[in-house]
Image 1 (cartoon, rainbow, N blue to C red):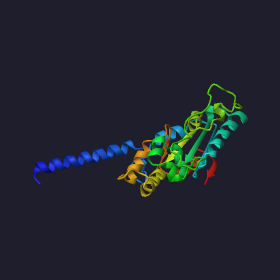
Image 2 (cartoon, rainbow, N blue to C red):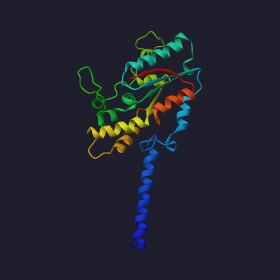
Image 3 (cartoon, rainbow, N blue to C red):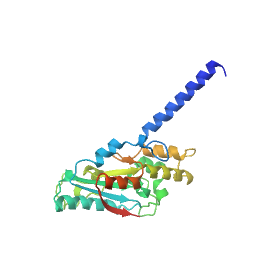
Length: 235
């Protein structure tokens, strides 16, 4: 190869490497199967889970059981109205992994990768659910009565719980592993690799979702470093 050809090839490799790096930097947690510390936005994580609070509670959720959202709502109501903790001083985190990762997936992800079919999440008619039907708020924000069943205090939607301060975590490891399984099951568009599916999912999570390296590790960090109490584990 002559010098001109060598320089051109080198430039192409540099450009390709830069493109890969740019993609990695744009994906929460990076594009590797095992997330590295350099790819973890620890500052953003610390900001949301370490905010000032009088009481901290963590719900670890593995299997997909939407009734858990009602438990979170009941905890918020009990702590605020029953025990008298100021709403702004209650910190609750939902640590989702396994099938519960689906709480953090946008409608785009649910539809494109057939999440309902993948996890066996079905509607009353027995058909796979095709969107994140638990996301959108359904409450009447004008009502301040916690006994009003149409008020935000009785709304178990993800958006309303987020509005009340609940943090929804997404496990990077779970997304990577699920993405490879989605490809193997033929639920991803033809030609996509597991890594590509994971990058697509991680860049199309619900607003406010916080990506962490490994949820089982994060549970330990939340308890040891941030002093969260352990509330529930669903299998």
